[in-house]
Amino acid sequence: MSARIAIENLSAGYGKTPVLHNVSLSISKGEMVGLLGPNGSGKTTLLMSLSGVRKPLEGSVSLNGTNLLQIPPKKRAAQVASVPQYTGETPDIEALSLVLMGRYPYISALGGYSDHDKKIALSCMQETATYDFAYRSARDLSGGEFQRVLIARALAQQAKTILLDEATSGLDIARTIEIFDLLKQRHNNGTTVVAAIHDINLAALYCTRLVFLKQGHVILDGTVDDVFTDENLTTIYDTPIHTFKHPVTHAPQAFFTPGSAAAFNRHSTGE
Image 1: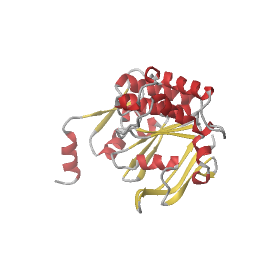
Image 2: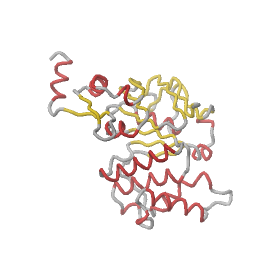
Image 3: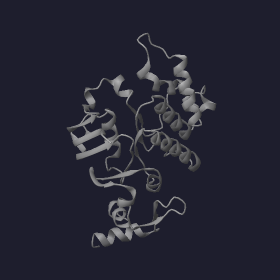
Image 4: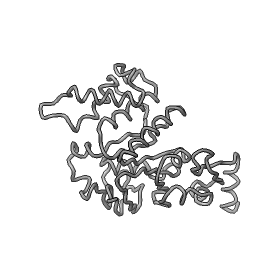
């Protein structure tokens, strides 16, 4: 598969302070990539760079051979959709209107959303179990409900690449599995998915490739079976981690020991 996204020597951050340092990655069409790592490792900054929201301090991001920042915003939105991390801020507009914003790349020169746009938006709300509150204000939704509306908006863009930043962090277990099943279905149909995921076990269950970041650097990059090991996870997260096979899927899963992190860190620092 040819590379859809190419990241070359990327340094990015806030102001002149870099969070990412000299990151190079190539993401092929149709991959489902999980971005993992401790808090502050640079996952959000990387996703913002991939969406064009944050400009590189150094290096570049390209999409199908074209520098991302040289692609007009409307055309870029037709190719890459983003689900940002939920901040607790919600606009006072109907949920359906929010999802319709995902149809922005397809608005005609005359402006306004067509019946076709509305049909697609409602279909995406049906997929994300948000159809029943299409005409409620987003401010009246719970955090998890609002997050699912944002996912519906991204799906409505019909982009071939979807970027997600902890997109299911506010959802219960059942809704989380529903969303990841939906993303996996889209991936199986050719959509490229790049997701920052807090739950490493969830990432191992669904992703085809895992990229681990730590302190702004790519530490590991490979298939789940290759990189999801006791030694690797223990080193990245600074706490003892043991992996075992999932009883149904046989994907590796991580297990933690309560109270072990402090002792591990005292030992590793020689205290």
